[in-house]
Length: 275
Image 1 (cartoon, rainbow, N blue to C red):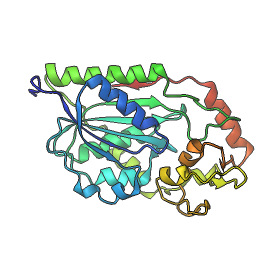
Image 2 (cartoon, rainbow, N blue to C red; image 1 turned 180 degrees about the vertical axis):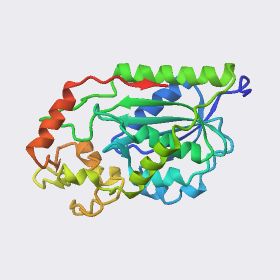
Image 3 (cartoon, rainbow, N blue to C red; image 1 turned 135 degrees about the vertical axis):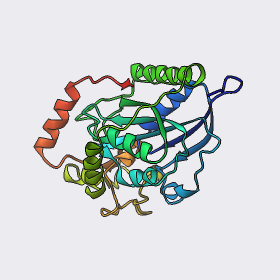
Image 4 (cartoon, rainbow, N blue to C red; image 1 turned 30 degrees about the vertical axis):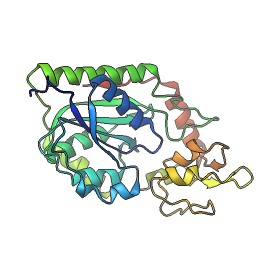
């Protein structure tokens, strides 16, 4: 691939309600030192509904990134990229997880990319602050931290070196049986898995200043003008809770076992990594 005369042209596709996935991608781009010519933020509901219009024809490399929810990709994001044509372009896949385990999300994304005519050049699994991290139960607080972000820069530099100076090789599918099993589970699992362990966020009206930041950031557009939440639509991503400047958006673990599990997860110190 001869791109030595110009900067590498990049396309990004991501889902990032709390901003951690987007932050890691930004640092990977910094390491590549390329130009973003197309950026598709699938966090936004409108963009998820018009993804069929996205073209990667002019891109040298596509970066696809998303957080892990219950060990899988968020289903609506998955459905969007599942129907994408990556047009034979080189791709790197990024998953973010809250210090527990990426579980099946990375394999799920790799399988979708390769089935969508993408050439997987590499993938990264990065630690981000857990969606359910809070003052009482801080889980991976402040992640991705400086070490994580420098790892992202190094990943970008490694990718750039491979694209510019070596024969481009890409990774291949794992065992087809594994892909089929994961795809079947992902297709049939509920969208709203978080509701099993955490309450749907609600607004404490005594704290609320009606800044509408929660309304703007909600990937499901399910917070109404009166600050009530459509419980059927909410995916408990906690974006509204984390962005609220007065801590007026509140949600809680449903039982003591959830609290215990979060405390155990917080004791670990997983490292971000790439391949």
